[in-house]
Length: 170
Image (cartoon, rainbow, N blue to C red; front, side, top):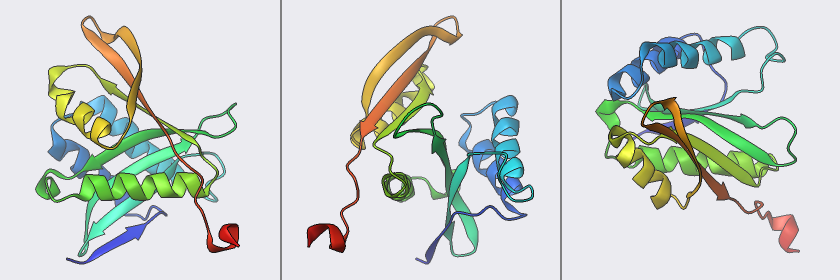
């Protein structure tokens, strides 16, 4: 299995992100368009107009999944994980765990100490919620009827430790 990581979006990524999100069956067209727009905006010129960061997981020559994250303005060391998605063709192979772990490392290396993830309370998202809990995220807040009547926003958080380097141990 040939896995590669890439952070900088390339020309083919907006279409790949659309394909990944559509394959999942979790996201509506408006959400998919928003995610694709984030990738497109990050590719414009020198990328100074956006704080969105990405991590793409490539399996052989195909994008199997991606994350989008960023520092939360006005905080010292808090980050949002905006998107995490694995193409349906690659589910159940541990790619979700790998890409979330790698994203957490990137955030820690950037000085991040808390990661926030938002998701829906709908039954469809029970596997997503279980995945976050398996990855040691704790349910921090419930915003009732946020998305729609009976569809609460769940906010998960994980406190991460600074990355220890060889020079830190000396």
